[in-house]
Length: 137
Image 1 (cartoon, rainbow, N blue to C red):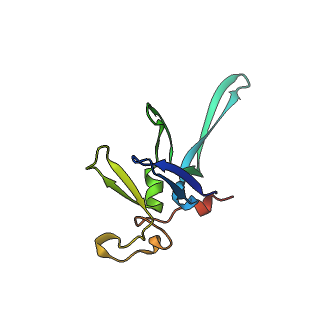
Image 2: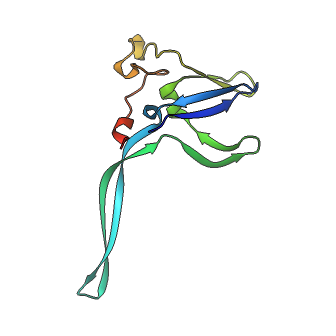
Image 3: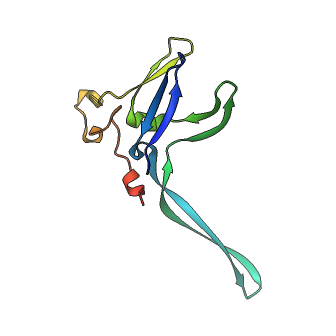
């Protein structure tokens, strides 16, 4: 899977490139796969046979929404992938509110415990290991 980069622009016009590796933006999940076929009972009465099996698939952790803004165009929700790669900070005081992205180390996790193995080699908030390695083919 490739690394991705998203160009974001701040209210002051400054641009920043947010880079995401596959460990940040790919989820391994299980989905139902439905198969339908028609068999004929007594040779002429059609009967639909439906079978369902579970299969693991890889999906991106973000997608476009069916929502456009007048000023900025289509809206994307990118929360989780950014939290796996960056320390994201919000400031609700200014108008409009702002966000910042930092590549500082993970620091401490819950209850002041030092960084867990899940933080090794990661930036941003402590997180669970990702499944993108299983998604590479």
